[in-house]
Image (tube, rainbow, N blue to C red; front, side, top):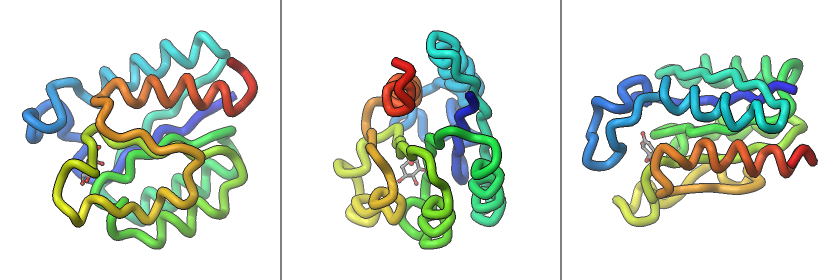
Length: 145
Ligand code: DQA
């Protein structure tokens, strides 16, 4: 069983970018942690990152064929993208939204996410570890844990 973990713009710089907010953990390290958690439940992980909205839409379409669930950190597109919301609505499996920082504690423009109404759950402010915690919850949603 395959899970897609999709990451939006600027998250390729995780570990180097605004480390006071996002910490020093890289996306690669997060991918490793998620793969380890996935292995506990027989889940495989495909970790993807793009700075382009259209690429993320295309990957969500691929997930329709390939993935049992999607974990997504849409990054700044959370706050702007009806296209990602629409794409996620074409996907039948569970969707979990993750934010490294607590978006509700930050600027007002980060408080709203277009993606959240499609998500079974939203995790914000648990740091990089939020991804692995979401993996555990995904296993539960898929009745594997
Ligand atoms: C983020 C929060 C967003 O507001 C921001 O644009 C990001 C990262 C987070 O993981 O905390 O790029 O999604």
